Image 1 (cartoon, rainbow, N blue to C red):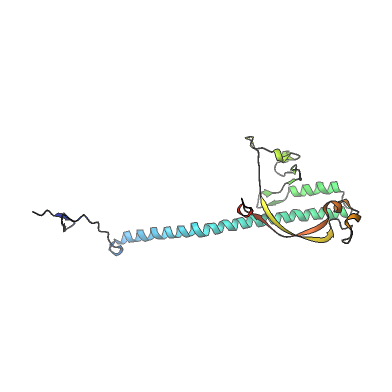
Image 2: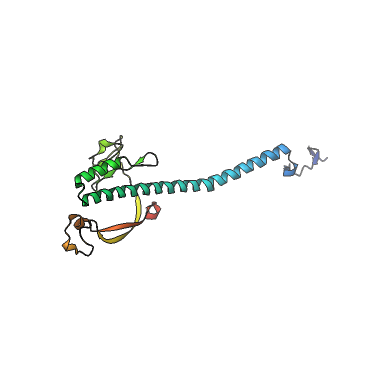
Length: 207
């Protein structure tokens, strides 16, 4: 006696397993086809947005931020040159020029709410427009509210070109270093121009 199994209108011999029959796409109902195509299209579009457009938008935002930071740094440098020129012409004393420069720097903004602060080479805060209580503070020992020491690190690359003129043009460019008459020139020497400037990532500095 041969036992046969019956499945979906077909007789299946006992030595054969039950074989799953997957319908072809053209055999699917119209609604299933529409849903399948919609899901595949959504996955495709999402993949394009995630892997192409999002990185491109992120890079554009970073470029705009860098450009904004460079522009506001240029503004600060122009202000510095303005007051330096007034000191050289005798229109302002050095101390008054510093105070006026600091006051104008307090009002410089970029990107809506970003700002600049001034600290000296010893990491002492000279001016902070948003937190004036930090003025005169030693930043090397600055800590957050939890007592953790705050450290911020950035890397940049600047290409500069040395100019023949001294910082204080009272000394002619051909003046020998030993013959300089201005302390500013004895300390800082000749002027230089910034040819290019850019921030570096950790990978570019080997970190």
